[in-house]
Length: 335
Image (cartoon, rainbow, N blue to C red; front, top):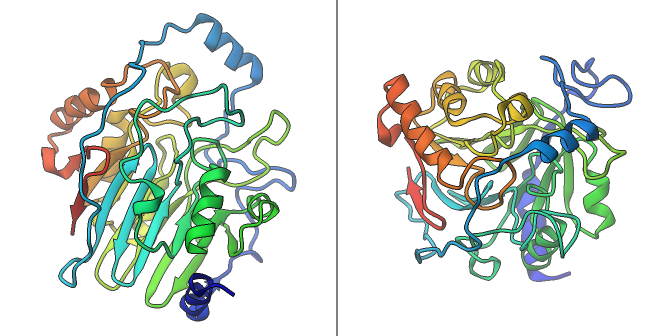
């Protein structure tokens, strides 16, 4: 047994789960998962119609990153949150380092030669990451669950992978070592920290025939000194109010602001910046950070539109600029 794997197993000795598997689920019909507020999942023909009639704004082929030093965690810090890019963050907490939806591959696609290609390099590369203890996965779309990245992370760090119901078999089939599935409102306790899997309004699927066979969601990471919320991929709904009511207001909320045009196609499952601003208010977050933009072109808006539309939304809702921010790739905030 390798030293890293042994250390991880020691870390997880205090791991426990508050399971809700015996309750009647309000989001599973016996065959597939669904959103309690309504699914409205688009069909293949809807996708074809959108793509046939789409007029996407052209993105640049490559955008250079500024260089930021890999953040260090000091005893005075409650949390350090670093934007890697897209939906990938490094969250450093006292005694615990967490990665969210890590995607380091060139394409968000099952194919190496086709599919959305990144225009920005990750703000931190895998070799420069500090020891990773936990990886949280919001759902199984290719821009959020990248098996090649997960296998590299597992080989280097042997972390615990927390995944939605239905995705455990996929990771285990690729040889990942420590995987735990979670349903909404289940808790995973790691030492004095609690990671709760919470609702989101989205869908799942990696093939045309496996739609919604696995769950999707968001995560609240609660430590003795802070709360960090990772929204995953989601449309706007009252689940943000539910999360605040049940889990409390986060100190930092990581909220998607991109992949929102055209609205008739995207609205149910992807927030635009104005809706993300409303989610920030619903959550009562002290600070929110925009994500899910500027890396892979997944929709019709231009590469700069999410940031400019967020600026307009802040003015509309009279939210201070430093209460909902956008980080550069590789940049961090400390709390």
